[in-house]
Amino acid sequence: MGRADAHALTRIRVWLACAISFLTILPVSRRLAPDLEDIRRSTFFYPLIGVLLGLVASGCAALLAAVLRVPAGPAAAVVLTLLTALTGALHVDGWMDLADGLASRRPAAEALAVMRDSRVGAVGAAAGALLLLGKWSAIAAVLSGTGAGGGVAWRVAAACAVLGTSRWAMVLAMRLAPYARPIGGLGAAFARAVPGWCLLGAVWPGLALALAVWVAPSPAHARVLTFTGMLAVGGVIGSVGFTGWMRRRFGGMTGDLYGALGEAIEWFGWLALCACSR
Image 1: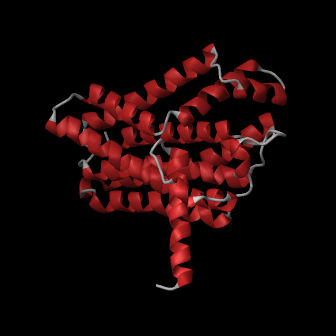
Image 2: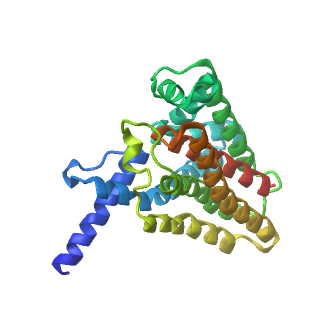
């Protein structure tokens, strides 16, 4: 292996480590020393981290349902708790901050100040509770296997695609809008600064969707294809529509808004999977 190849592999490792560090609470080596460009390029792996989280969640669900015989409702609560813990509830926090900002009905600058406040208001708390309740009910319906939807394997791949697509939607939003605040925060490093080729990270949830179609038995093909279309179209339209709304309301995007978008697309994805699993 030449020096150039070794350098390229090192940079890829750095990008992957950055993605893990930004999207999960898992520890990574501090010796990698990423620069700003590494942090931006790490977004290529954001959807992959979502896919891997989907595998972890599916493994947890399989253990609870098949081995421990835990009913769908409690099993869904454990799966959702695991996902929330692994991500540090960072995006849920963004969702609640957005709810507080919108509920304030103040001008953009003042609403952004409300969102930056570490305290959560009543509207934000209610929004967070409704988000988790919505995701729990959809996951429970998928785990219950009502109607079976033609098997379990395709739903595992589909769950990976849901979590991967929600992360990819965030990357798309990073390309579409400027940063909203005059003084940069965490999200300022990404707003309109992510390389266009990082959108090719869509290949990760795309592979999960292709696997879902491939492993699905013939009776379920129509459902799987419907889910694939819903998730792909919903991910793009949801990201573009949400980003446009935030540009009109706040003048751009922030780290909180990227997280809120990811949660919204994930919730939609779970609902789509629930609908197509019946």
